[in-house]
Image 1 (cartoon, rainbow, N blue to C red):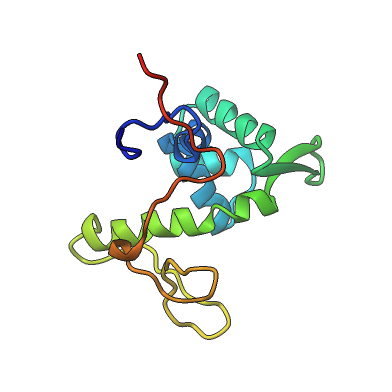
Image 2: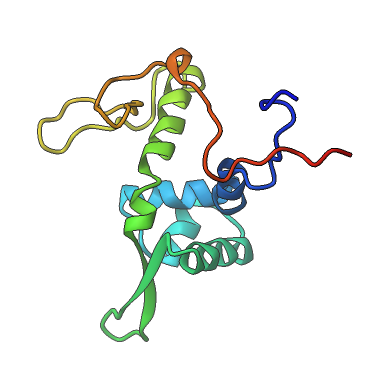
Length: 157
């Protein structure tokens, strides 16, 4: 049996992650949170997402612990929730930055990217990189996939 082809993929971390964030509106909500939006109306205005779908996606992000709600109240108005990113949500930044970087390279407007990611501290361009736990920059061709602790083969059929 070939472990690459005959493995049980039912416990794949990528597939499980896509169940949570693998839908367009979910990633775009996260983008807007990082750009500074926090209110339902702001998301609706910027994204143009149908209200019911937006409410469902925001609720799911809160249930998954990626966003949290805090209450805010504008003078003369009732209290409302605003959405803030949690540490679990911040851990998604490299994945979304990778999508942005790929999109800027292959799908940007002919004039260039619409938004530039810069390091607030020095103004330099920010890009997603892969590093090993010892700090070495790693290229895709240098990544080796090996069975992990939850690895399983398909049952012989």
